Image 1 (cartoon, rainbow, N blue to C red):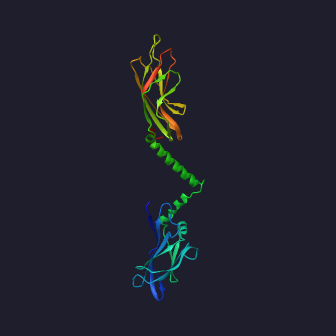
Image 2: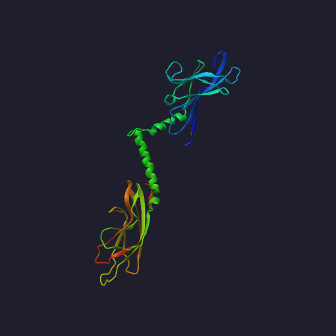
Image 3: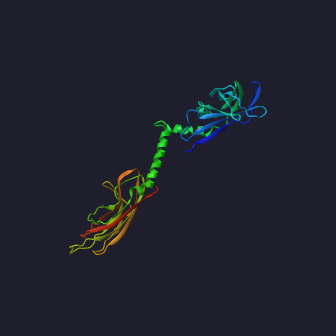
Length: 312
């Protein structure tokens, strides 16, 4: 993240002082927050006071002077919240800067502050500071970084991160899991209860809604049949398999495969919801045969399953 530069200005009224018999004019005091980042500002030398000194005839002062800076919480009297002790500075073009190493917290916490510059022991009076710079406000981000374990802020940040991770995982799921598979092997349907036929390979899936479609063809086994050789009626449905547990879709198709030498194409579609991340998930096709007479068994082959994630 790029560095942010921010200034805090006082009113631009000039203030005067007589120093060693020379009338000086101080103008446009400024607090400058340096190199502040969104993750917080430096603990030391985060703020710098910038001032301007000139002679009565308007010429910038270049002589060395002692400068001290004090920050108060009131226009008169009040409490001094921080200061920079007097030090010698040599203005350049009348301008100079003094670091305020202990003023970061005070400026960030106090909405009403007054700044007093003292030049060679003479005060220029107090000047009200304006709005707190964005750089100091960014210090709140540093507090967020260090949120106490178990605090409401820490819980909120964790919940937001979990939502972001879940959304990203759901969007990436089709690509990461390659949820599609073709199967040419034949599966004999000889039971009157639903059984897993075919579908995608086992995969770990993120929370979300998954829409699955499987196409295949079915025909009857008529080898060696001499009596009661009618085709068995088949039932198809989309299903989800997690380990050995089957979850059947809401839709159900009924079909009677033709006699041998012909096949019946079909397709089933449904959707399934996962409330949490789940491992070993397969999505595809389940089928069963009806308990009608002694009809021949049927087989299913040439299946193709594909899955897509849908927004919840």
